Amino acid sequence: MITKRENWIPYTFLAPALLTLLAFRLWPIVIGLSESLYSVSFVNAGARIFVGFENYLRLLTDRVFLQSLQVSLLFNLIVNPLQVLLALGLAFLVNQRVPGVGAFRSLYLIPIAISINVSALIWKLMLDENGLLNGLIRTWGGSPIAFLTSTEWALGSIIGIASWIGVPFWTLFLLAGLQGISPQIYEAAAIDGASGASRLRFITLPLLRRSIGFVLIADTISNFLLFTPVLLLTEGGPQLSTNLVMFEAYRRGLVYGDFGMSAAMVSLQLILIVSIVLAQFYLFRER
Amino acid sequence: MSSPIRSSISRSTSGFSLSSLWVYALLSAVSILIVAPLLWAVSSSFTPNDQVYRYVYPFSLKAFIPQTFTLSAYQTLFFEKGFGTAILNTSLLTIGTVLIGGLINLLAGFAFGVFDFRGKNLLFGIVLFTFMVPIEVTIIPQYIQMRDLGWINTWQGLLVPGLANSLVIFLFRQFFAEFPRDLLDAARVDGASWARILFSLVLPVSRPVLVGAGLVLFLSAWNAFFWPLVVAPRPEFRVIQVAISLSAQQVQTLFNEMFAGALIAALVPIVLLLPLQQYYVNSIAATGIKE
Image 1 (cartoon, chains in turn purple, cyan):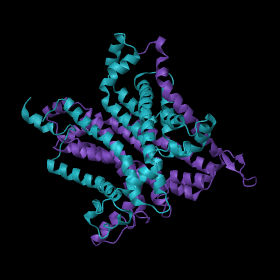
Image 2: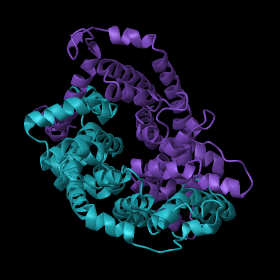
Image 3: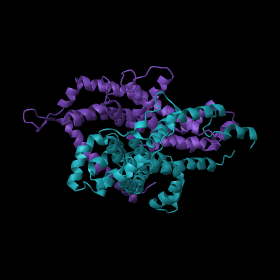
Image 4: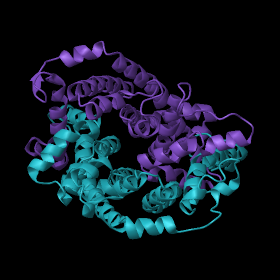
């Protein structure tokens, strides 16, 4: 493809974006994470002391952190498969050729346009004790549900809101993937007498592998980093039931000023995300 | 082509189809989930603040239609809270991000998707890695960096760090990796430069990924909140998401103003997004299947 004489070409294509990333993203990340090796001195207030891996060791016995890790794992175990499946279903649905489907497709694009903080605020008012949803439930004779303030419901509500925000966005990429599949392939399969289910299994899903892989990986990363809905709706509660690692790291660092522990949490979660993403890449590798 | 085969696949390009009744039932159910909260928000933005919760309990469909129509929330936002400036600033930043960011991420994604070179996996690993650390973690070192560069309260401070976007590079890479190698090789044999191959051979048939990438960049710039808040706090640099959050953080939340701000912020992306729907329809038509 490229000759020896042209070895430099890929690097010139990469340079503008990669140099920007290195300077403005990677460098601050390295500095920020190296903070996990330091602690604030109690004796000499404000002084930073190098403590090596002590923060990490402390995390292993930190009950609040361990619980947040548990919440994060549970949350991601549910929310990622759920969102990818819903997005896939929605992409199939709006790809059906029925009259008027275009209007629905437009409608479904709308949540994408709304920023996460605005979506979270709207849903806060929807799910509030006196909010719209409880108004509806009470009008129909039910007793109000503490969507955001009970341990039974809070994490589920966050999953619901994250999906309301996320699913339409990921649907767009899967729909693009679906539409990239040549209709001739389906025609050929139909001539061969393939049923709908086997067309789905042997044609659509394999040809969508790259799109699904992209969505699953990008969605997993975004959900591990989910922060705003927790901050605005539950602040990690009740009883830490929605206290995702990102929120605990924020609280430890920016609220209590313990930047060392905060950076250590983020580093540990980073190792976790990298392992999961590597596994996902392996799962969706070229065969 | 015999007609039974054609009709069995004409309704769906997904490889399977549902009966129309089911399709409409599902489409409507999803629509209610998506529209109800938004309709309530829109209606509330045109309602006096003390009446926002009036029809919530006992619930009445009047909650979705302003019963006392007023534009006061919008007037306050534009005449007293500087929403006009915020919209202008956000627009300029968004245009810059989509154009410059689109180009540099396109080049990088093309290189990752098409070329084989030393250090490829390491460099792509770095790209993904930067995507896994949120800005909340790096905000302090980034602020110090901006201060040392003298970029606090400047356009370059607002714009430049958001140009390279890992998600967009990843998206381009996934797309270009699937581009038929034979076509690229043929163009090479004909003596075309790589830049020419990218811009005149590859790009014209890359509309789906260009739209997706443009959208991600557009939304990242239009919805930016945390970074502008920190790097350019002066009012003349205020962006729309910061303006909304400032009006939501008042001592007594004015729900109608908050909803009005949200509506203004969402309006521009919605108006730009709706033609995308048309674009998807076109790409179906372009495949040659007609009903």
